[in-house]
Image (cartoon, rainbow, N blue to C red; front, top):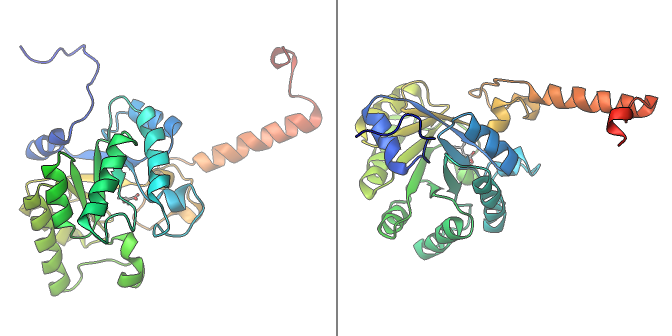
Length: 271
Ligand code: KIV
């Protein structure tokens, strides 16, 4: 007997992502940092939510992800997992939690699952040893290659990666190595569309693109860019699907005016 079509959707599992790739079914991932937003994205049927270290710029008013701490990631991961019923929740390992030793990375990942409630972790760069050890320990691992914002100082800015033959070769090798090590998916950020398409075809796990063209198996956006909440509109590859910023300003202006004129609270809201 097949699954009951009337049954509520179950939570996305890491294995579903590879099955979707095999079936040629593209899927979406969005970032989430708090419970009410996670609840809405979950209700919208977004199957994968990323507690990204982009929380730094999107929510905490910082510039860049390098200063995000593990405690901050835990705080936001807890909120997001409380807000979801169906989405797979992936949490970023922040800068400093895995660059020094693999053991550090394992301890941080264990905390993000155990205390944060996340179902998987993501780390940037060719963290092949960490991926191998985490998968052996039962912790699903998502890779992140191309423009890796935690390495912004080494990369010399937020620029497109893989433009030369040598750097494109390196990205191909890194993606294969992560897939071989057991990564269940790989984010590819800011790489030429042709290269991203080629990498997606070369590895058996889903390649989730951001600024990497239409040839990827899935796409991710920062939710604040999607909703029009990023001052200046965010990076060129991000598309705003709504202007929630304008809705907030308009509601706050109407409230401000109603308070000034005495229209709020009216009889109905004075009880
Ligand atoms: O932190 C983040 O939002 C990310 C996405 C850009 C993939 O890593």
